[in-house]
Image (cartoon, rainbow, N blue to C red; front, side, top):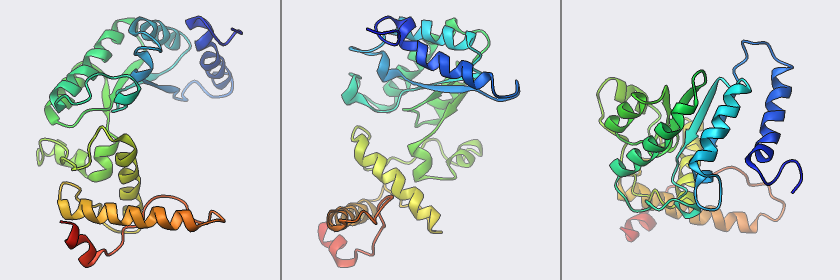
Length: 232
């Protein structure tokens, strides 16, 4: 292995070198942050102890906050694939709490797997803040709903959370809808899931015919009409 491979020190070198170069070029008020995916600390990757050491090194390098991401990349290493939302939230929170003792200055944020207000409050009790990704794409006003106690959790999408590819496409499609001045689809409703899937199939077909790569971005939701009703 070269100086960037093998030991944890070597594997962290590139990140720390980049951070050092950034710090040399920006004012002290510039916020430097990094996102670490906890999947990387599973079998075949970093261990949790490696993560603690890495976070300590990142703090010494001047990172203002470290985002610990759980996500739902189970196929890459997690074994809680079919567990309940409560167990998912607890898993990621326990992971974050294991890392916290290594830090004294850097703030920590937890992202991924959080769906209920109870889980979010428990997380905020342990870390400095939380991040929301795909749930926000389904409900752009979700933070306001939670803060105003108008909702106790994110809506339960009918798309399997473990199907990361499909849920990621759906998230991008929701953003595309909002960019067009439209409301996101309520994917807790079967008819909307059907509309999304039909639109995605047509989008994929059109992409296959686009030899000059003029198509880009995410799915355009179409008026599927009777085609959607026949699938329900």
